[in-house]
Every structure is written in structure tokens, then in C-alpha cells.
Image (tube, rainbow, N blue to C red; front, side, top):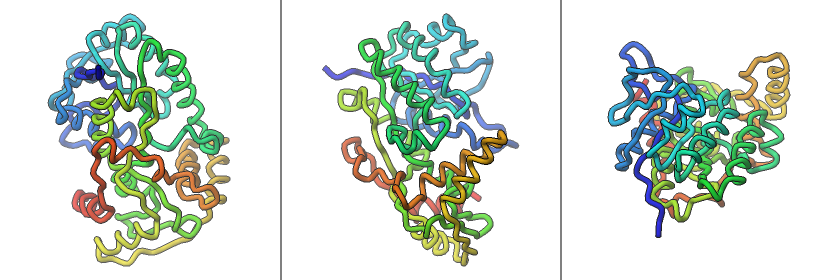
Length: 308
């Protein structure tokens, strides 16, 4: 008999209603789109918050917790799924969420993956936080007799990457940085597609339980993205060529000096490095199994440009 998931609680950021004068934050940006798609999919969605009286996104119930063990267990009682939509700084805190979920008899826990493929040894060795993610999944594997888990691997967030320019093509400045020639394929997902992928993973838990689930909107190259950006904006972009070996060294140097912007340099060296092609997940995708519809680069670009 298939496991039925109805009640879902999300621990993460951007679950509040945005104030009129404040944009959504880039960090922890998954929370809002994720809960919106879960609500649309018919789940009863709650958001974990440390403060009382917080107004969350429409359709999301606020559940307060001071993150003490007993408080978390109480918050998770009656929930079928816990989703950790957390940023880098909170990755290591997920074990206490898992412990509480087990005590509350939660059926499935979704750890804070939602990005690069941390099952890949080369990525584990290159990214400082990948080890934390792996430790969380190892902990879940050790407790599979008590709780299921699903690790969603989405690649970088496509629409956010276009808005903020971290995919190398900056729509605001009309400048592009192409790494290693710009022809390396990269699997990407919009924030909305991640939300749809999570909802589909929960609906199909008999297939997805205790597995990594790879999803996508599309697979692109920087040159293809640049071509589409110039077409959509009607502007010619100023192009600079950089090697990923160069930004990799720069990233490690920044981290040595406690400059955590170096994490982005390391991520870009993984996504666009032609030596190992670590960002292409096309052979691993669950999109068809989960009923996810592809999204074209042109359509996503049009949407992002229209939002400026």
C-alpha cells in the first residue's frame, strides 16, 4: 500500500509574506516557491517559525518552535513530511530536526539538498559544505527503519541564476563571463520546478523513498544561454573568457580569508568546468517518471526579464 502524505511542514526561510518595500531575499530563497507549489498540489502546509504571530505565505500555517528537542517534537506531531529548506549555515543542524521527526512519527524527511550532486566524490572534495550534506544523508540512511528520506538534486536555480547573474550571463549589465569556453552542459531547475518536483516526490513516495531524485527544467550551456539572452533582450553582451581553474583557486583563497563569497567561485568551477563535466545530470533525471514538464531557456529568460 502506497504511503500517503498529506501534512507537510517546511523549515526554512522566505516563508513570510513579503513586505511591500522589501524584495525576497536571495539566500534561503527556496522556501516561498516551495510552499506555494505544495499548497497548489493540495498538501496541508505548515511553516516552522521561531516567532509567534508571524504571518506566513497564503495557505501556510505558522507553527512556532524554539528549536529545543521537545519543542520540535511537538511542532512535528501530526505531520507526514518535514522539508529542510535551509541555507549553508544551517545544514549541520538538520540532525536535531531528524531526531524530532522520528520521535513524532513523521513518515519522510527531505534534507537540504536542492542543488549540486553531493553524491559525486569530486563535488564532495571541492565544496566545503558538501560534507555536511553527506553527513545528514548518512544519518538518515542509518535511521531508514524509522523514517524515509528523499534527496532532491536540482542543479542551480535557473531563474535565480539569471536574476542575480551567477550563471555568468548578467541580464542587468548585459555582460557575460564564459568559463572554459562556455560549451559545458549544465542541468538547471527553476524555483517553481523544484517545488513541483518536491510535490511529485511526495505523491510518489513508493518510488522515491530513500533515494536521490534528480530533476530539471532544462540542460543548457553558457553559449546557448548567451545566445538566448541576446535574442530576448535585443542587446549584444560584452563577453569575457575565464578559466575555471582560475576561479577555483580564487575561491579557495577567499575562504582561507573567511570571505564566503568564495563558495560561489567554487560552485561555478564545478558547474562550468570542462575537465569533469560535473553539472550535467541528464542521464539521471526523474522528470518523466514524476510528470515534470521541461521549461525552455527562452521562456524562463522572458519571465525573468519581465520581472525587472
